[in-house]
Length: 145
Image 1 (cartoon, rainbow, N blue to C red):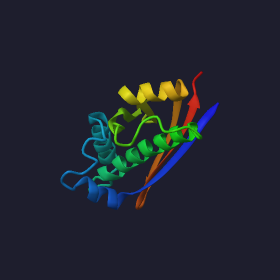
Image 2: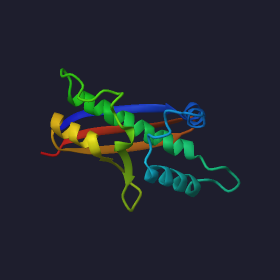
Image 3: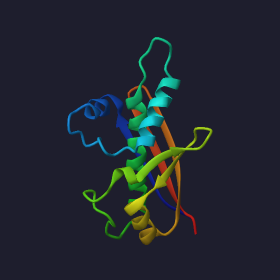
């Protein structure tokens, strides 16, 4: 059963400038694995003579995290939020990929517990994209029970 759907769009240029600001809120939102994957994907997809677009890959991952929160919120429609944005540890929502590069979400720590307590065991379906000036993601939250 589908519990919720979330989508988010990120302006890559604006996101890139925020990444480079001292004290940026994005300093701790990505796991080391997400950062390494974004760098590797950027290098792999760069045309000869062009600079890697790491920000585009990180922007898509940020959109995935936002999309997950929106899908979870949709699953809780009519109920109060389970976790405040101030208490949300964004790095506990991690974009991972299988050996063929297909993205998925892995939940960790307090997010895992809060999701399980609020909506039960879930499967997260994720689609990421970036093209031109934008990155976007869609998350479908499905009951695993």
